Image 1: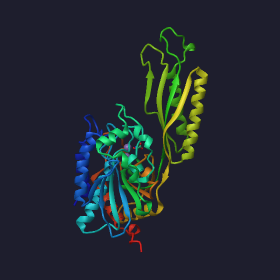
Image 2: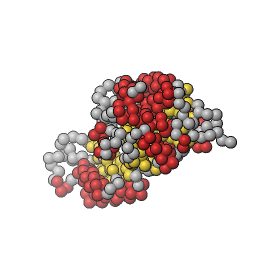
Image 3: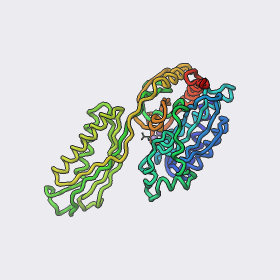
Length: 411
Ligand code: HGY
Ligand code: MN
Ligand code: MN
């Protein structure tokens, strides 16, 4: 069977579970999410998995391994960014199901129990938080996040409850680390490295840390035609100095990725001097130390700009995820499976964050990257080939039957 072609077809189908408009827009706890779950249930049925939905609305498909064996968790997220691609997240769910389906068709059995996980919300686009599903399994979610609201004023907890989640049982989702072998996530690379090295697959060495800040410059508005330039306290001029300095400083480092992704101007009128700018600053790095030092430098710089031009400046951290290393033993087993499936081995860090970032608080993690055309992601033209996804199915199937994850029942 051509599992790569089946993956491609399934991903085209589930991409239709999207808000109208270009690309895929599938946010958590929405009708699009509900429709997507029907497809995922079909994939899990074809793989012979028992299915259930947990209290965080993670859809789980389980294969029971030998009596007393530990469980390998494998999956990714069903949600997308607005106007996103058809592979980010959901690819990891379909490839996991197809690897188990392949084993089932070949009469082979995974070396342990396996659970495929389709997490509801990794992107953190609808709510100013993310990863409730994996954090609930790791026992690290914070109740306070349930009151965070989306742009319509709907709280995360309300959306989860009306979707079928159970707030009262979130605490009971935490898994016992002793029962979990590890977590494997297959994901489109979202970058150009594998394509640059002409490799279909890559084994991830570590996942970058990330922090998000909200910033404000406040000056004074006035008539665009009458206030002399020297007398202005223009919040947009201050913000533009800050934004270009952010990019210049990040370019001087080798590990920092800094992005001002959203910016609001008030009063946003062609003939009025902006008195307020409110904007985001996201900073990523595989080194938490470098990320924190960069944030400190930008805070000092923003304060200086404000002092020089008579404005006020605020910078508040709103979100943070530490960098995490992939587990060497699990990654070695994955690397062997990649090579035994006939693929060249490439190892690389991940500049994107993933569900695996949160799962690392529960268990060892490993990630498999699939080549991404032109490194394009969070974009309608995101693309992975059927051949590369077929190679990933083979490597995952090999990993699931490999000896390092065989857990003979505890004596
Ligand atoms: O932002 C990220 O890195 C991920 O796609 N949520
Ligand atoms: Mn993703
Ligand atoms: Mn993403």
